[in-house]
Image (cartoon, rainbow, N blue to C red; front, side, top):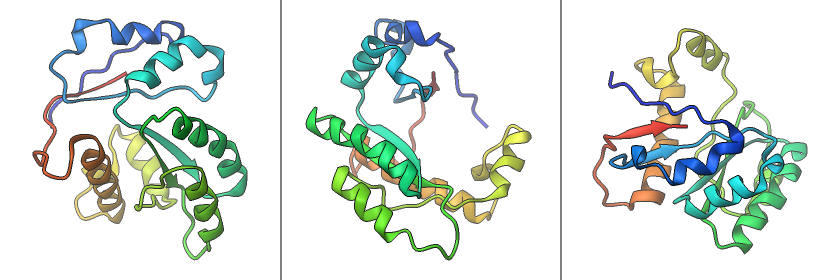
Length: 167
């Protein structure tokens, strides 16, 4: 497996990612932000302003959707490309009302990520479910990646993004 460089940056220095030539040459940079984004508004605004796509994960509950919807509406009003991804989706639970609520706030990824204990089991070994051949969770994550890749790079983009980093 190719290694993925990771740049650990203190949240109050997050905007430094935008000024560093160290990130040149990467096809994709994933920035995982803490839930307390409001504590560093300037850095967060700078990151949002440069993002090609903002992926907002949310659980399929009204509590979570009501928390995420104002952020999605803000991104829409600011004309920032964003999509919500439903995760921890329980089997046999009707989530159409939550989906409708989120669609009113912004774009919703057509792929849902199921609630699987196997994510934690794989994570404990430093793996993701994409590393487990034939696992249904692997196909979900590949489908989410296919959607995100098409949103960022276009439908006709090369099948694989080769140079990825995380921060």
